[in-house]
Amino acid sequence: MGLDAGLLYTTDRLSADELTTFARDAETAGIESLWLPEVSGRDPFALAGHLFAHTDGLRVATGIANVYARDPGAMRAGAATLAELSGGRFMLGLGVSNPGINAARGNPVWEAPLTKMRGYLEAMDALHMTLPETSYPRYVAAHAQGLMAVARDHADGAHTYLMTAEHTRWARARLGAALALSPVMFVLVETDPDAARGLIRRAIAYYMQLDYYHRAWQSLGFGREDFLDGGSDRLIDAVAAWGSLGDVRARLSAQVEAGANRVIVIPLNADLGIPDWGLVREIVS
Image (tube, rainbow, N blue to C red; front, side, top):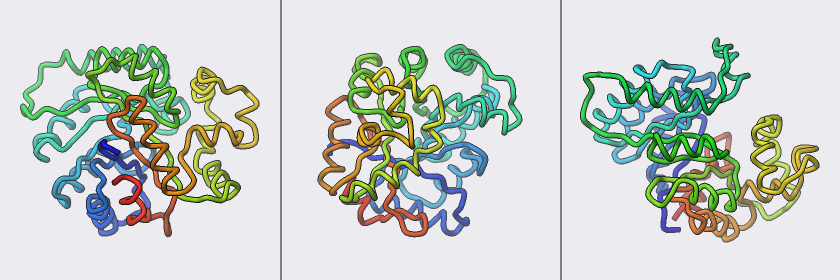
């Protein structure tokens, strides 16, 4: 496909030994970067340190580190330390998450995402700290114009989630040519439409409840009827890549043609939760 392939995966269900095997298998399968979400499980910074210690070249990113979970100094120090000790393999992905998750984490006060993210990044940059000189890229999770502009003005790029190639083309124009753009896509090699769409609906059910995803999808031409009953076929087909191996690869290539530097995949072909690594290798090669 001519790009770096990332993988986003929640590893909380894996034991320490299973986690080490998982990371090594991902690296062997051709995954360039492993993206770690932060919800209610393991700390992604501590987890990244473990992964660096047990892999050779795999890059590790937070996808996302929640800006409500750490003050700007802790975020900057953690990222700089990991970048130094990993030889530059760390990437910092930041996001605001949402009010429900933050309240569950003990952060009930919610600020407007645009104001929060801009102020947070400015605070990170304004701090006078004694930190390693090893650099690391900083990305912002963004869908709409405001946060995309924050990513353009205060970061090294953006990553998006459950967005179409059309959105990627718009985001590239918004970011400009120099910054990184990494869309996240669910991928499933399954040619039976009912089976494929059924599995994808279960995988994205949480996001179908969130109004800010609805707003992003509406900007792409979807209507309220597309958000009923787990999502219309049209919406499911637009935000996830399914079908034959060739179909899936073509969908990822479309993201590259639209301006993505990296596509971050969430593979749904799995056995007891572990991706089919042979299939992952074929998808991303």
